[in-house]
Image (cartoon, rainbow, N blue to C red; front, side, top):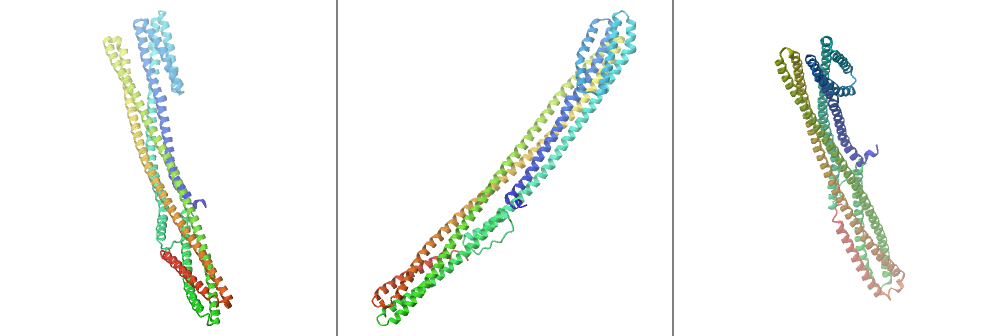
Length: 561
């Protein structure tokens, strides 16, 4: 809890909240995008592949049934060779289906198809042995029903695969919409949190610093009566305010003490001038009365002693003021270090915002990649649509040829009609898939737009933080100037201290001379002229002392106490 009172901790906490929300948004989008990618991959790699295999197996059954019928009608072994060739080539698709799924309906349909192929082997064997009637009976009574059963099974599987594709497409659309909605609301929430954090941080920093700046400007102009209220804050700004308040009070007390000492020096100077005048008059009358000289000497010694004591106090006061000035300078330097620390924290915040900018940019690139994958799916669907149209055209041609064959081509016409219907079903399924993929592309574009909007908000946040960092830099410059001014004032106090020490030495010398005058009353008559000369020197020193006191009062007049 104590660390939270530090201004730097509050800054880190405030911007940490914004960073956590933006990172949460990025992670949420990544999770949803991964889910959408998995659904699309499952739809393309498994469900769509199984749909194509089921259609291929159905077409194979129709073609090989036609080959058997043609072989039975003509006895041409080319149809038998085509049947066997198709049988070998279709085994790859069967194995691919079994590798892709272990669904019971697939296993049952392929096993049922194997039974049909076993019957076909029996048919060819009977036909080759010359048992044509038995072969035709086997064809009509067993092979055709089993073949139609296999075709119906594959048709059911195809319908089931279409339903699975539609379900996966619905999941992709739902996931895309959820991602879009989540991104929108989290973005709005992050923006609100960011704005609130910026406003609170700005008020925490700017309001007390602006107030303190105005007060410091007033103090810098010489108005030391400016009140700096005590603060309950315990962070760096509170420490700065308290240090400034103490500095103002110390300066005011110091200058008041200097003013009092200056007034005292002026009074002592006037008193000293009066005393020297009295001594001069006494020196002129030494020859007539030694008693008056003794009295005057005693008075002079007393005043000189008092002046020496007063100057000692004045020197001590100026020395104390000089030491306090040094203390104020050190506290100002500490304040400057705290401001530099705040500037460093702002620079770290700028680096963190740049990291967030990189994360959002990466999310936009992933959305673009998802959109490109959807376009590839559209291309695959287009190829399947072309195959369906070609199959429909082949079925139409087969129907025409069957019509020309008359009675012998009736069965082939039925098969051609089934192929045409199957091609139409594939075309309808392709249309549905196309619409679904278009919806995915539209949702991907919406998600990309949302992320780009978030990117713009992050850029704006970086601008605000950099502006705040510039404000800290200006504060640092102002405090550095204040440290320079305080150092200048301390130098002036040092000069005053040196002058006061010299003045004190002069006063002590005056006291010594006065004491010697009092002790040598008996010799005063002989040294009257010397005493008179000494009094003139004292008078000159008194004038200098008064001038120094007046100069000091003029300097103090620049301040409003």
